[in-house]
Image (cartoon, rainbow, N blue to C red; front, side):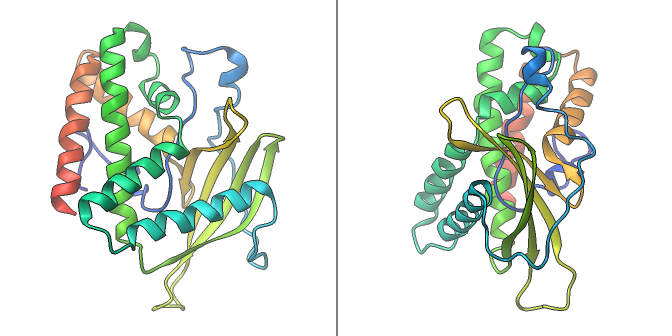
Length: 235
């Protein structure tokens, strides 16, 4: 994908592996919730010697990595495979929380109708990005290597992606931020590829777009729909 939302999309390319994210909106939620979002400089510390997931968060991450690849590698018809992957993805994230976070302060001035339309388009866009990018990595192996607990319910799970066909090539460092949702189940709240946290990058990108378009969330929604169609057309 060469562009997103009419401007640079380096961060969307970094969504190459695994599952999406949801954090919480800064000016839209209580400060106690916002404190759980900031993660701009947390390092990835993979432990190469650890090959078997041990903590519940690590097991959750590896099981869902494997499940995602299983869906993409299935022999089902493309339309059926797409719907299976979409349902799988949306079950892993809290799309509304993620969408609101990426809108930042612009969510406060948007109408409920515009917010709802954006959240729906953002969910479709997120699935499209992960589905098309993951498909290009089907031949690689993504394994959990360790984790770092930030709090009792906030864990960064580290992974490495390797290519069995080219074992001497450097591995790709990946990390997932995993928390517990309101129902107590794990959800993926952010993704890091080689040091870049996706939700932070998306928020910056969307802010730049909205600043150039008078803060009109509807314009961003329409552009996300266009980008979603473009992703599938070029896959």
